[in-house]
Image (cartoon, rainbow, N blue to C red; front, side, top):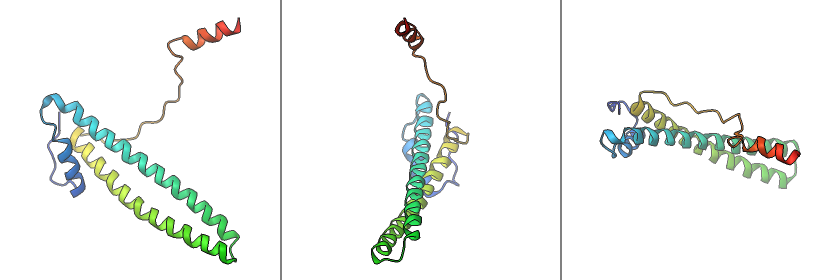
Length: 138
């Protein structure tokens, strides 16, 4: 069931909610919740990826800063700093997007979205792997 749409949603969340609620009717309740879940998952992954990129650039800047002094290195540092500043602006936009996705998920499902951990167990392929190991060992 879709929760009643709140008027306190941010403008971006309102737009995202409009897309999800395009699918009207009780038969689309699950679909709406999955669209909201997928949006949260995607925006969370975008934040994680951007933060990783920023960490890499920051490490490059630190390495270059330790060897600074020559004009070539100083120019490289300047370029990397400009790239990092652009990434900071992107990160703000990605954060706003993710927050809107979280708002919409809460409005649609009534629950707070949290990322699920990656699987830690390995499937044995319905027993095929253990049987394969036994056969190959013989």
